[in-house]
Length: 207
Image (cartoon, rainbow, N blue to C red; front, side, top):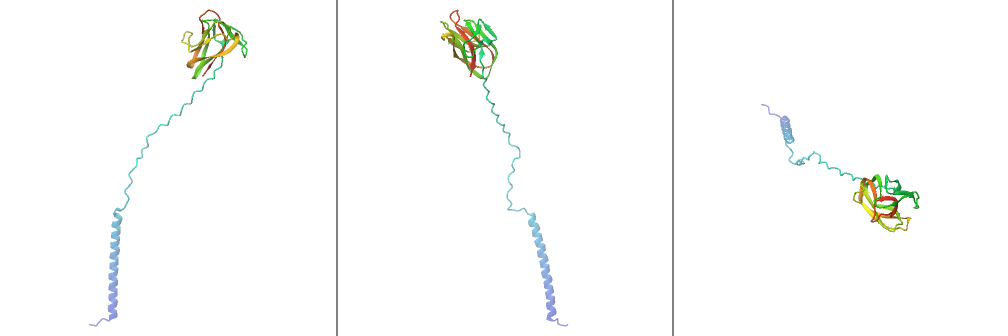
């Protein structure tokens, strides 16, 4: 048998070694691929816990606060001219010497009255009545404001005495029980005697 030369032996050994290395490399790649697949299939242990689910149902509706209702506007009352009343009982108009001219009603005695229909007081209460009056009498009496009936309890009243003459005018103020709405207004007169005791030019309500 011929003895192989060292060169041939080394060549074959080198080839065998390379083949072994290639097989090992292939096996290593196969193992790496297997391990990679296992790693991808395993849930990450370091994943942060899921945040708790929050309710998506709407919050209870909060009723809107009712807007404040606007304050009622006070009625600006004009004067009730005595001679223009819807009813004059027991009195007579006459020319007046009061400022502004026109007429007043005179010869007022107890039991006489004036009536004014459908007077609108509004939503803001009237709390006083200004009465333009004069008296030349030597006696006194009372003037009263009543609502809706000449026999109703007075909503306000004041005393009248001599002002210095039948055309010597002054404005007296009667406090009223607060009045709202629409009413028939009666101005009534009373005294302890049976004689004329005052004249009236106008009545004006106020807040």
